[in-house]
Image (tube, rainbow, N blue to C red):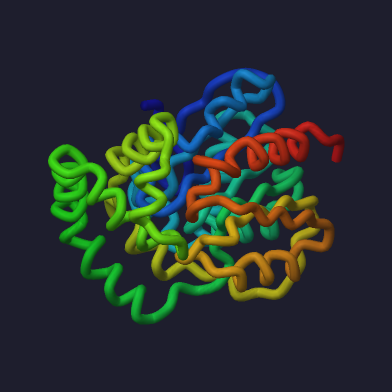
Length: 274
């Protein structure tokens, strides 16, 4: 994949399509291969820029260890690519970076779509466990997950979904249609924490300074991994916002019964004149 040279260090990226630029910041554990559907915006007249955040793929963690540092490095990526302004999509654990990017560089970000996005610090117990599971052990964790997806896919999906949904994971797996099941399988097979998620665990955006750009805040009502309090904080920070709460099966609002509503609302938001 292409790697841009910036004053902060190398930043890996993918750029597809042409038109108004949309920068997509994928969440924790997401690799360059993880697809949540945003890549389809290239077929809707947008230039889709997927940047690998510090610690993920070929972007070194030293490029931006904090949310602020990552935000500044991502602006340097825009400079390297000669992209003046973007609409921003900040997903899950990229929420803090999205907040800092919009707030620190308001002249570069036209609007923000926060999707299942974190806006509060990780719970201390989760942070400690995450450092163990997704530090030096992360390769074993994800190799084990891939093995489970091959040997016992339904059981593995139940175990994974039980961590991101308040609904009965066994029932979710039993009732999935083939398309949604394949989306989940492909997504989980693509995950790899690298050295990025350990940094995500420390990310914060503590200032209460407002975000001036229009914002779409989307969350699933059955998301057990990013509670509603995160969306509440985002709504308090964003002067002009829409709150979209959908009956998605899990944290992954881009799959399943709410996926089309999320897609259509994001598309309308991105097309709206600022």
